[in-house]
Length: 432
Image 1 (cartoon, rainbow, N blue to C red):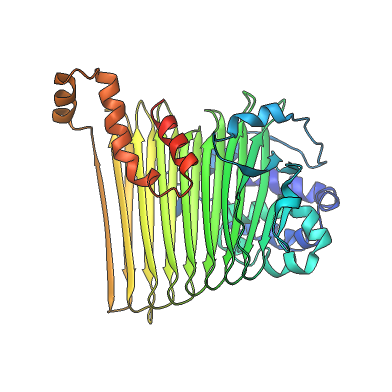
Image 2: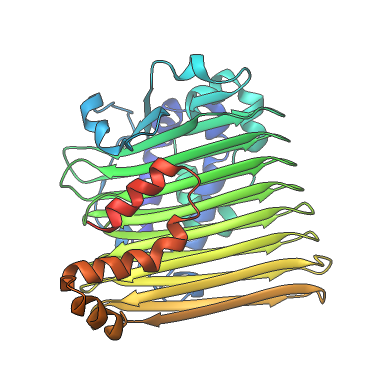
């Protein structure tokens, strides 16, 4: 065993210290999770789910871990960079993998019954609620990174919206990588919407220091009958940041969910989505966009499991790659027996702006029902030289013409953003 052994040994030495910095609900599955991790080991390039990202190499360096929960001083001024102009949000801050603070008015402005804040604190104050959901979707036995996160995670972000409550204001979670040395963080998100509830969440990742950061993030999302949920994940870190994120989603009947993953600046990112449409009439929009250059690497793996009839899913991922950037997309849609009248569409489109950029695409459909409407497709190419020439003949500078064509290429992904101020900000960032 290679890179795994250091994490197994550290856990055996520090298990009590890890427990002491967390809560019983988070401690309960730790040892089973570490056993699952030791049994599986990191996925390798020989395995289908990891063929585009060398996961063991990401975890091989000797990163520091903040197991004693020392809070890094962080000022509001450092967070300001993540604010989107003209968008009023309720702000929550996680520094590395410790919940730091919420905006002063956040608790007072939340509707009655809504809980939001530190996962650790909520596990102490509402243990039955957290125990009911924590770790139920994210099975450590099915994924080594989920197992490692479950073994080491001590805190994160929690939000609960009770039955019939709609949260009118966008909630914003800022995740900061901030340390004086190379650091590994294991953070967790637990999001619960009961029947008829509604919520929009913007989650932003930033790195404040020029150190190597490695983050594992596990997000479990429960969306009840008739509920609606929008999640926008925006990554604006730097070239030394490594991010491994797994999102687990379960939707009940007639629910509506939008998941939008937006990677604008990063080092190496590996994002997995495992979505289960469990109730009839559930609807999922799964979107992704990556703008990458230099040696940046973005790997998106998605799995949509249609288990009930009359459900719909629309999946659209787009990449724009320059320099020696690498992109990968592997998406699978499974339509199970009995999931009749499923409407599922999967599309992956990519632009390689240079000859040294690389894109790998693997769309898949697996269908066991006969009354369905399903499609999938992928295309990779370069900018239309004729369009570039035409724009230049109309007096548009070459670089401006390239930016205009790039913006037009990703416009349909940004167009799915249902927060106007955020959509405007994304258009501006794409053009930088």
